[in-house]
Image 1 (cartoon, rainbow, N blue to C red):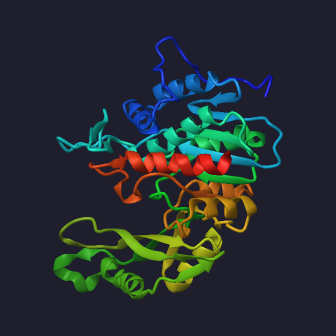
Image 2: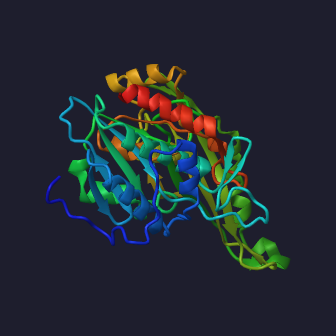
Length: 372
């Protein structure tokens, strides 16, 4: 990658040193100790960049607070290992253990990002240091702004600015999956269904039309809706369609003339966002429906030889990913992708966020065994 520009401020004399040869669980603790709430990833990005630039077998590029490092061994296949550097905000509840700095309790590591996803990032960094000559070429991707709106995504920025460096045959996103392969992901769409009435004084309600009452039919249809389970490439994706917010009314003595029901549809990856919209419009026929947001899902792609070999190496039955993750971005690039990382996703973003040292080490061992 000679001649590739080096973006952002880069490393400084005050950059925190990361020891990539240390125990991977202790490396996770060191990553947690560097506060990297979305928008504040700079110090951690500096530390990651500095550590990777110390590895002569890697070619390293930085764009903003995203870092991309690649082996260039001329192997027949290239695998992408990706993870985000940012976390959600720190908990506000006093005495929370899922915060910064990290803490240990009998082999369990507590701290913000322990599961989502500094354990996975530590595994990436450990592999980058250990695997000087893997049997597949590897691209390691570390990116900013995953936990906020998609327009700010560091991975999206890398796709726009350096698409050619993100070419690969198979991608693994090290999101927490409890050490089980989770293939693809559901898509997600948001809608607003609106009812319109006629305002009137509530003492003379018969002079108006109550838009909130009219919204009852929308809620009934959603309540009675039976979510589908759709099999895609051998995995069963359970859908969900729910009202998530309702707004309406102007004052305590006025019949409301407008009500808006906000709806979230999590749809299987056999559908496009347009398919999902058509489905919701059909269910809510007769009401004004506007799509406000949408992100396509990702098929699991487990038939790809590299994916099948990885599933066999992990040794556990793969599962579907019900939530949306950045595997969808790789799917859009034509790269089959799965989620695989240490920690229980149900603990992500909680005031008690934690991961076991054993889970982090097991994840490292599984990936190392597959890549060597």
